[in-house]
Length: 573
Image (cartoon, rainbow, N blue to C red; front, top):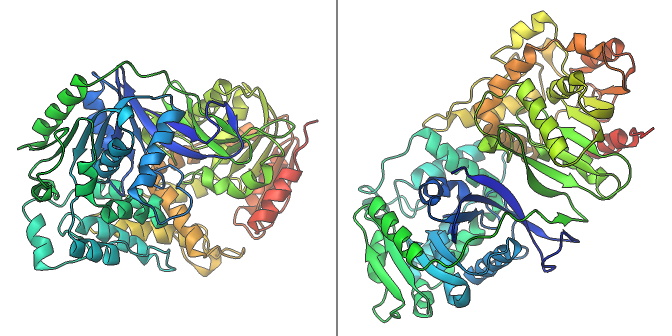
């Protein structure tokens, strides 16, 4: 059965379609039947759960949330946190999607949260499976809390990316990964083969997203007293592991005076463990899961949800408060809705808006489904999303290559689009297209030692200095002040890495488009806005000349001023 993705709005104002303030939890859902919540390890996301969700979806409705602060879930406020904070957060998530009683399966950090939830909320859990349970000594705890969590502050040379790659790779060779001693190696040398780079990339991307919140849930799991939690569990609970789990040996540390409700069992293989866990959850299952709960809207902030299309789902950020026609925001290729944050800030409370993560980008990622990601496919996805969320008329904003998706949408004439504002619009001649093909958007294939991360960093950094980025000559130097803040570059690199599987395909698709022919047919007001000193200035002016109601204006390089300017240009009549 397919896995779908959703956002739950968690608030003290239960049962309302609209709340004033809240945090949001991203989760995956699959299957039919009695409910089971599945909790991932740290610093992963619910993407880790997908294989098991597929395997068990014939028997259960499975909900796999991203732990607060991980994946696409908002973090908890405050900190440092205890494990009970995450158990309470899980209860609030279950409330938000209408779950009363359910089975619970957790892996590593997820196992610790599951056990703590079973201790605190015995009436709500039917059966708990804790796969890979942590029982550390005082010395181990002190060592881990002192050295395990590092500072990943973005650096001007991008070396923090290599540090993250090394941290993920080394966790398959040492435990703790931060203590590279013979003893730390002895435990792991018979456990793991160093994974393929594609697998390390998945873990690294989750850590890149988590950033400063890595120690939130992870640290809470290391700080807790795992043995004490088990002594207070009164409902059925299996604590388990298989030999290739780095925590397998720690099962021997669980004291004998645990209650009869808690059993400790070892399995020779992961398949045997999963089969036993599934049967226990089925034996204790009660009732069927409720239907999908619509995401409650939030008044005073942009809120996230997913929109369905024929191909899959699109991740969107919305604001529904304000007057006038809504604004639809289409980001550049290799980017995400996060690039629109200054514009979103300017729009909140003033005018409705929806920003979309294009297929293969941002939190849409693979949720959109299979198929080649071209500008036509993206235009289809945007059009369907607008229809499915009830946007009948709008203004359109685009950035960079996303303007060619907007142009395809306009060419079809299917939507009532009253105006279009295109920042740094792409309009290349045939010679430029030939030069840019395959080079503007190279394939960022994960490399064993993370070399591709350096390439991504310098692609983004050099694009602020040269156009095109891959031809760093004096005559190609960009005139606008470069954006060199490491934190902003880091965000853009993360977006690029998430979009890497589709990046070259969609850029090459855009380079094949005949933008000039479509521009000549437009009959709405269009503003082409190059940033001051942008390498796309002449292209924007040329586009304005081709468009019957086109106009070119120069926009500020300051993010806030530029956002205020494009919002001020909106006219509903």
